[in-house]
Amino acid sequence: MGVYVYFMNNLSNFSERLKELLFDNDITPEQLATAIDVARSTVYRWTAAPMQITRANLIAVSNYFKCSIEYLTGRSFDTRELKPKDCPPFALHIHAVMKEKGFTTYSLRKVSRFDGSYFRKWEAGEEPGLPLLIELAKLFDCTLDYLVGRED
Image (cartoon, rainbow, N blue to C red; front, side, top):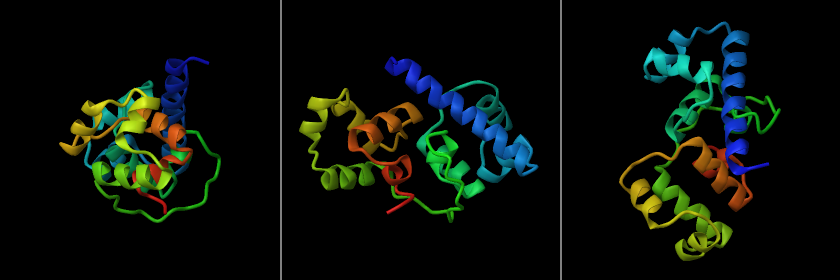
């Protein structure tokens, strides 16, 4: 399966899982939008078709529903409830994960498409989207929740 198809499937899984969570919890897109401080149209777009969602919004949605990001993206069927958690800034946490997994910036650049521009953007506060997070989780052989700092 091509990388693009794989990522689109995960975005589609996110859309479907979000619709399921909204329905099962009798929550409207408007209520979710208000609760996580995004535009109502953003939540409608997330449910209508696969689209980019940032790390910050993934965390906000998973905290709201008290589920894992793995569950939210369809990568897991584990429905155990997780406590909402504030996550560290991505630029700080990615370096800790890299160190733990035995990667340097140089070695990560050698085995992936993550050049220095990604790190500069993250250090400037830009949030990676779901496709990049999935790619990193695969490279580090970890869950999305671990990658973003929601689980230890």
